[in-house]
Image 1 (cartoon, one colour):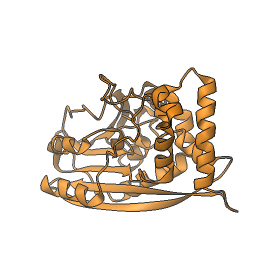
Image 2: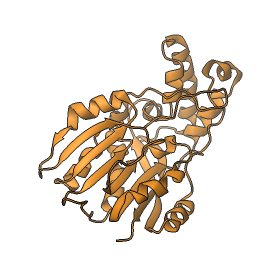
Image 3: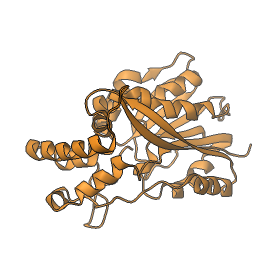
Length: 286
């Protein structure tokens, strides 16, 4: 679920990017922190019929944050869904199986753009995935309907699409050198809402909603750390489009690297990378 649907026409979405779990997890600590902050605001969960808490994680990626759900609810049955075979392979290898409290953790192929709950859930959660799904708020009603009374729908998404990391990437993709070669949208549409809009949507659906935003000032270290960060996320569509052409990949990443060095200069303690996140926890009426 860390990807967009495949393109069917010139005006449709670009092909789904391929994902690299190893690259994504290079910044696992920074990437996990927003989920931990989200998890801290999720209330205790009701059980479905039979007394078992059932949890769905949409866009589970390599499974590292899905496993945190098992730490909080060790007796729950937890399923992570993702449309990246590479991410699912890593998640299954590392985390699938019984949990400490008698629950279970498993991973299945599924795309958040089309996912329909097949059973009642106490929690449907998504961590940094819905920004890849056009019109994802249109799915909220169906997902909330699938919650047991008193259940929770919770998610967090990036809110940094106007940051230099994204605007410089879009501008570079739109230059004559790369526009036709990449065949990507010159400026991809921002698919997330503002916090107040999420609050309204979830309240209109009858939920008690808690929505907030946080800007993390991430201190990244190492050589060209912002480039290393985006190689795991925002740069994936470009790397996918250039796959197999090492010279073009090196040329593009070198140009983008130089832009990022100017926008995010290294300081005495590392490189400060502001990262805005939007959070929502919506509890269905009991």
